[in-house]
Length: 445
Ligand SMILES: CC(=O)N[C@H]1[C@@H](OP(=O)(O)OP(=O)(O)OC[C@H]2O[C@@H](n3ccc(=O)[nH]c3=O)[C@H](O)[C@@H]2O)O[C@H](CO)[C@@H](O)[C@@H]1O
Ligand SMILES: C=C(OP(=O)(O)O)C(=O)O
Image 1: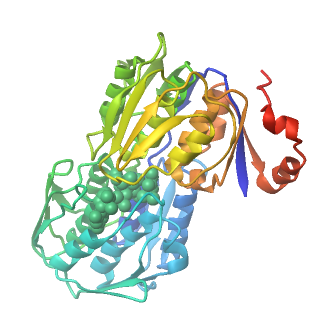
Image 2: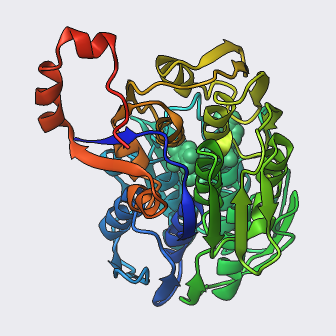
């Protein structure tokens, strides 16, 4: 297993290009399964999740090719399996997105209950409710969802749950309804840009969807959809992570190939903290730290609110600002696995239910920490960039699921982040003597 070794204390500076969005790519790849003919996607990031979904789609009879330029072709064949196996599905949440397209295209689907980031309870009841409303017979047996429907029928579907709507649930139901007979109206639909991207992709394939990006999506079913060409949108979560990396190191950064409109809430929070942000140039964002930053009070909410996928990274930043910040997560109220690891680095955080009270400390210190999920990993990297001395972050396989070349991007901005093999480093650590543990190694530059 790999780990990151981060030497903290270097302000980031420079320009970096944002990769294609993981969470837009995955449901779009899954929807390509339901098309006649070949689809070509551009700007597909090279991530473990993308490779896992490629394998899953191949197991379902889709020929997938992804070249280093970011172009991916997907060519579905009619006679593939309709069983999405546990061993692939358990590796990532978004694999559940094959359920709707498989059912709509092949009339039956057998999909393992998904895995994904350990960020709290993640049921798929709303996905199943939506597909059942479209006329599918659904049974959960032996850890698999078994769904059957000769032809789906349009319906009125309310997708609101206790914590808001569901992003991948909206994707699943929308993809299935695209091929249903008659009209479907989804209310309390998720409004995330990734849902909008999927709707536009389906429309480019011949679907008839309106209202995407609002809580009411209307879908007029069509007989067939055909393969198309489509450009994946920039990753707003990666963009936010990089902006916070610049802020936490007191540096400056220009992001290219970014859609600032997708980052309005994050930009507002960073401005409230005191960062200077300029988005005048097209598809570009510049952040500078020109004065001491201030603590904030923020709540992660469904789009257009502050994304839950950026909550951990903002918490890392709050740990370094003098005064008390309050951070809540209303989407995943238990998404605080990063708290204890940040505290290992000297952070002062008190968690009360779905709220964390962060008392900023003058200086985080390097430590051995463990990543628990994708965005928690990113938060630990950011904390490491700001810490005094060396931070080692284990289990970065979580990070590799969703960040393309993060260490290379940070290195290009002047950070010192090295990927090392954990086994080799583990041998070294066993030889660390007591004096080094009592007095952590200081940064070298
Ligand atoms: C691959 C992907 O796109 N993942 C994103 C997607 O996950 P995902 O689509 O899994 O997240 P959801 O939007 O479904 O979850 C939002 C909330 O609804 C609850 N819920 C969800 C489904 C359901 O059937 N019943 C139910 O109660 C969840 O437990 C959670 O509290 O949106 C999340 C919220 O923006 C992001 O953090 C994830 O990065
Ligand atoms: C939680 C995430 O991913 P997933 O839904 O695939 O677990 C994420 O991207 O932050």
